Amino acid sequence: MKERDPGVKWFNTIFYPKLHTARAVRYEDGVLPRIRETNICLFTPWGPRYSWETRGVEVQDSDKEVEVLNFLVDLFAQINQNMPAKSFRWLFLGADTYGSKINHLPAEVISGYFGSLAWRLHQVLPTAEFRLWSEFNESAERYREEIRANFRKFVGSNLLARAEITAKSMGRGGDAKEYLVERIAEAMLIEKEFRPVKVSCVGRHKDDKVDGDLPRIYLLPEQLHAPWL
Image 1 (spheres, rainbow, N blue to C red):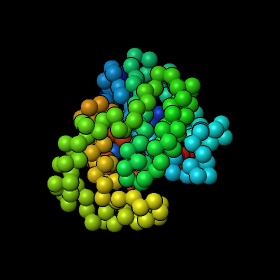
Image 2: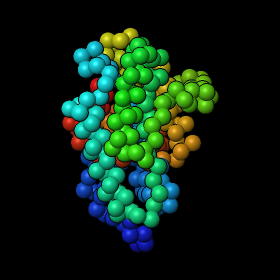
Image 3: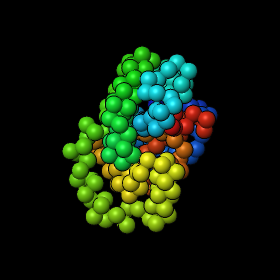
Image 4: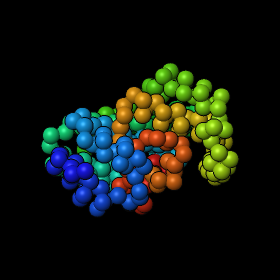
């Protein structure tokens, strides 16, 4: 099919082929149809800072977080320049519940870090929206209940085993099963409520299975992955 929208044509033939660092998920039947819409939601989840004992909670100019934000701002500038007929909403989601409920980080660490990150984000991308996952806690509960009741339908043994290894390596007594429940519930709720294109800050293998059918693209080079770690 010949692409009629010049902005979508640019995205499909220049922007994405040049910049993607891993294969997208649901590109043809998810990403592109949503990019063709007039109002587009981009979605980027962001983890808590697990290395706060050595790095502190404030985001500094020299931190990896700033480098990632600047990278994303540059991408957004290209998108806005080449897709002027579109209206973009970019939702950044701070994963506070993962830090508090699952990995037992101190509440003041979580709030301090995400407060600093939100301030930094507003400085470089004032149109972006920063929200915390805990704001959706009530809405997410029905998804959690569904996943827990049908856990083996959503989570295979290999995925659970990998999550348990990761939780053990982090050394914070995290609950691997609840982490998977939370990740899957997040993907289901965000897809239902926002119908976004996810711009991920981790490698594709970190999202596979837990993100379900959420359309997503991978544009960050590996050295910029997971700036919160």
